[in-house]
Image 1 (cartoon, rainbow, N blue to C red):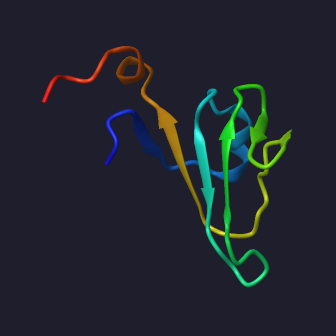
Image 2: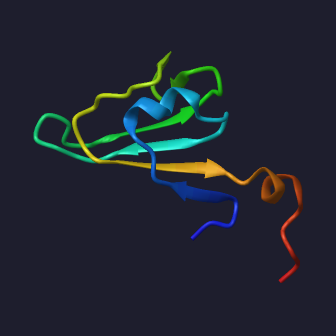
Length: 79
């Protein structure tokens, strides 16, 4: 698991309020055999193969990963 992101359990209608950098992963289905992945811009839009309003009804399961701003600002610990 990444220390820079936290997986959140959200409902689709909450996706338009995601902070910038959040990753949304929609599952596969017969209609969408590859699923869909996008990055939120923090303004209610998603960026994937284009910029558009955040998808909230893809018809499959979704997973949401929100950036941990403290982890992104702090350099990783030396190994």
